[in-house]
Length: 111
Length: 119
Image: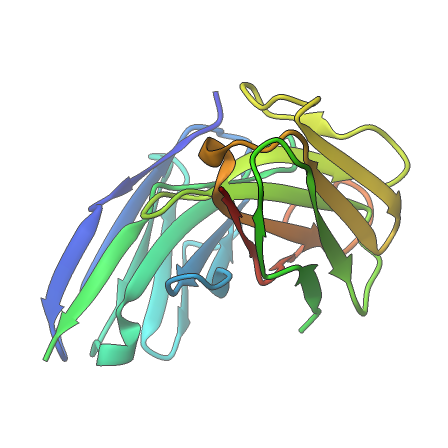
């Protein structure tokens, strides 16, 4: 079936340190992998995405890596700041043209 | 970026009544819209895929007679929760895909979400 596993479910890091969230997907035909940030009671915001023809993409402090062979993709946030605290969801675009979300990671940045 | 508007943002209804939630793409045509439900501290669960001019495709376990979806135009999809019960209380959020056809990777834009409370 279509599913994606996301780890960890909660993550606490010291301000300034890096945070890494990992996802494993099931649909080998997937070729689009977005990451969303959601603050409580608000809509998910797309923060970065990657397509299967590249292995890594970076946007300032945020980077995403993709390993299609292993069906893994990861979000990397460097130099974390308090405003990075939120819930992060990985997702993939299934062969049925649906966005399937991971279970989410609650990231807390300690001052 | 493209804008998707969802209304109402919050609604309280009595048990047994129906409530309608609207999702509009304001500056693009959306042939496909998606409806999600999110319970507190949980992920977004896809309920159904709404296609303009045709019947919605529901995910397994979602009652199509309870959650009526209509996508009558390229800019509007509605979700009606019929005979609502307290367990239907949740955050409902729509998204719209910009771009036609089945090309994967077309950008998805989310509405603001609607908090439904059934009392």
